[in-house]
Length: 440
Ligand SMILES: [Fe+2]
Ligand SMILES: [Fe+2]
Image (cartoon, rainbow, N blue to C red; front, side):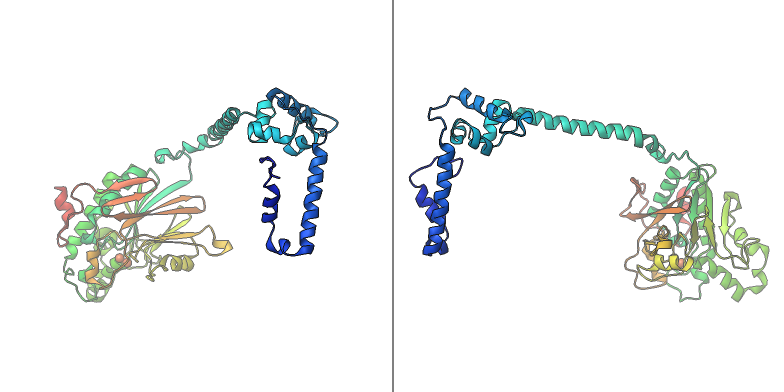
């Protein structure tokens, strides 16, 4: 019999119907069932023997529940005033059914008797526990986290040994995307502090007019306009940087076209000091650190160097040579075996060291800084190119890379949002130094 249900006439029939067919239809099994039921009924009768036949009052029942709960002879948990329905069924003066008839559930009787917390008490305790957990978290944050959080707010980096490089590559002279450039300038002004680096990582010139490739419809931008354009570009960058921020400019394959052209067509003037990149680009006044190694046009002392530079002892900056879609960063990391950044592929990508020794190493391929229009001069298919730049944070031996991608004139990264200023995404005439024209 269910404890929530009074015994009734239909009980036997119900029990019989509840038995499965294989029991009901099998005489031997049916006899076992009846024997078990009879035994259970006898147990209930035994236990009911001696129970008061008087109708108990509410206080009678509550007093009896408390008595059973505190009875040291029958309850090993008496000091905890713990009681279950079964314990009351065994040791109570009244049938347990009286309890169910009055309170519906046994825990209802326990609450009324003060042996279980009231519903309101439970709710209050839960609320208090939640508040205590919040207070604990608050104390933890105040004590252990807040002293460190302030160091990073607003890029206010007071501790030494931590540097940031904002890299842009593949701007391809007059094909520069005004949107990307505007976002890059804003990021440089906002983020970089003394000792940090604004990195121009190759293909800042386009030099298509000097290329041995087939000339495209835009290929006739004069080299003079391009040099003028890059000078203007670097001047704009220097103007937004905080004092003490370095500008570094590395050689890309498009800068290299200049050397190859001169070597092939104008050997007699190629070695003139005025033909060196540092002179040619006329950027001394902007305090630019060129790493244009390995060319006869290289700045003094770099002629035999490689066109790359290790920044802050942990991150290699180089224009890159790998182009395989989705694999270029991994290939560059594999080639150099150290953390670094490159461009060239016009696609954003990050690769991580794939073995135990290299697991803290990473390589970022920065997206292009130019508009897709540049592709008309070189290739037909340029699906999957991204525009933007990249941020690398270098601390000790470790490097954290964050690509900054520009979509529809908006750039999000590092919790910041940059938007090109009004009109910056209007199409430009790549045949002119539009940067200089706009500055007027
Ligand atoms: Fe490029
Ligand atoms: Fe390139």
